[in-house]
Length: 407
Image (cartoon, rainbow, N blue to C red):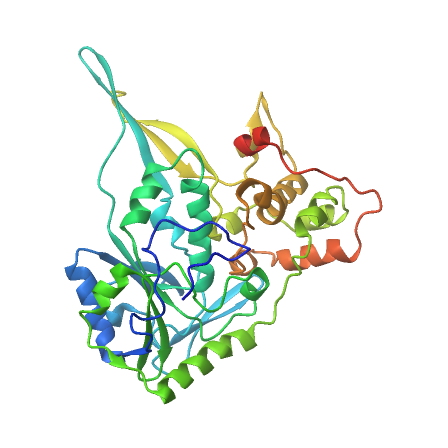
């Protein structure tokens, strides 16, 4: 595995450790199917809270697991714009699905976090900043697009002059077990964003599932330490071939594409395009796309008092640029129409994110397409603007440092 960053995602995260080639001696390794429980048990014994895919409320979500039996064995997902369904696969695959409504963001950048407290006693108010030890997570089942999303959030929360201490502690403590995709949904377009479907960096261990077990790759010193406690065998040429065929199957199933050529200038040069009105008539401004997105990071802060008024928590909560109040300034919202809010979301995600963070804010996971109640597909919106750019173009230069600070 190469540690060289891609052109699409140039920022290298601080964890996991510097990646090695796939395995220390250059060989392919094989983990028998029944030993997946051993891996989960070892991580638990090492003090990790293992989080992985599981079935809940007719979806495959991410939650705590205690063994392989908690995984969605034999289930897959069918996804289209505005549609998500589970169905039996007809086999016993552990990871035979794509991605669901959850992302790993919720564990690294929690939906609600207390950032400060105030306690009143007889002498006045005592202010404090919580400094509790974060959970020590082991993420099992991280897809390539999700590794890219974590890398994007690393840049947001750790790559500037100020780091987010909550994210930093959780990120540094996390152990990542990636799983290569062996199938794709109709909403996936990771190949357009150069983020998948093959996991190439950013993991401690990576698995490719085949019928009798897993091909295993080691991506860090921490991964090597865990792998050394497993009953690994050299993979045969036949097993390696089956793994390559399974990975290639995901590539061949990807049917959705987005042309990213000069996309920043395309969108910023068409801020008055009539397509924004068209999509506004379909958008409910429900915030689903931002809630399921693995890279969106908007938040707001609110002071919450207990019933006595003697204790106050200052809470940071996930927010969305689709909420009207999110742009409230000087007595009124800046973006008071769905037209302006959808345009803000898409131009930031695909265009000004490059100015702000040096990469795209989209990893091609397709969640925003699947979980949009009206089936809005951002790849179709980009294609529509590209096919008929506005005659009166509203050119916009790269955003300034002041604008970056305000975004």
